[in-house]
Length: 313
Image 1 (tube, rainbow, N blue to C red):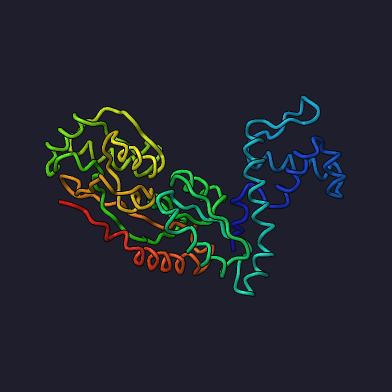
Image 2: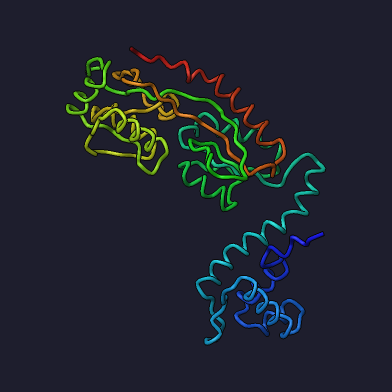
């Protein structure tokens, strides 16, 4: 039987030794901290460098300095060791039906609707719950670097392996504009509207903003940049102030809590497009918790009535 462990250029013990040297700044000091001999530490570092094929320390200076590769190794090794140290406590806690900590990323447009229900539900599954609101792109990055355990957002990262996904719901993109604006039933009328008043955009940093821009390009609608914002509130508030029109969604408008007085919500001309909200987690790391949470979220959103927001013709 082949030993597949040789495919990895390190083990956890070698990473612990490496991190000890980083902290101590010298092989001898790290050896004393670890209760090892200096030759043993030097050998472990030399073997780690041999297997990774790169120098991790600049030995020409004192205290030892990390190379660029060494800095990257320190960052990743710290995360791996921290995760490894959580395994035993995690296993002990699961005997009681709970995990020690669940870290959730929540896209801004779901913050008002889901922060409290998510917190209440997860309190029964974890001793500590952390919910961070923000952009989906940020949460996706934090999931991949293990700073989050799952996220609810607009990007399902379908091109990446090692993840599991649950679709939560879909909603249409709609026009949000002043009641003083006339009906917009065609792409040509949309172009006329854009020539008359600015488009209040969602930021290009957001997946929602990117999807809207792609759709406008498909329609052949070229609208100059005027204003763009990250938050659903800012977009809706600008429209309510009479400073332009927006392409948004029912959930985004509900999140803004801006009064609909003096506003109209209309169907977006041309082919209809939807925004898909998805829960994404690392594959099988949290057992059934993500699946059960997705079911709970669907029930909460179905009960909000947001999808029933009146959309004019």
